[in-house]
Length: 165
Image (cartoon, rainbow, N blue to C red):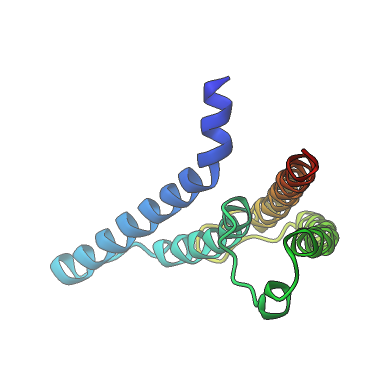
C-alpha cells in the first residue's frame, strides 16, 4: 500500500525526471559529437522535441495534484471560505469536462494517425504513440481533478462538522 501512496504522489515527477534525463543526455551527447567529432545523431533533436512536448503534458496533472496551477483568484478571495470551496469545486468540474473533451480529441487524433500509418521524420516511429501518451496525460489530469474535488469536498464537510460542535 505504501508503494501506491508513493506512486500517487510521485508518478508525474518520475515521468518528468525521465524525460528531462533523456533530453539532457541526448543534447549533451549531440554537443560533444558535433564539436569533437564533426558528427551528430540525426534523430536526437526529434526525440528531445517529443520529450519536451510530453513534459508539458505531464506537468498538467502534476500541477493539479499539488495545487500549483496558475490562477486568478481575486474575486474568489473576497468570498467566505465555504463559498471559495464551492467555487473551486465548480471550476474543477468545468476543468474535468474540458479534460474529457481533450481526451476524446487525443484518442481521435491518435486513431487517425494510426490509420494513416503516420511516422515521425527521423525515427520513423509511429506518431500515434505520442498522441496516445498525450491522451493518457489528459486521463491522468481527470483523475487528479477528481482527487482534488474529493479533498475539497472532504475539507468543506470537515469545516461544517467542526463549526456545528
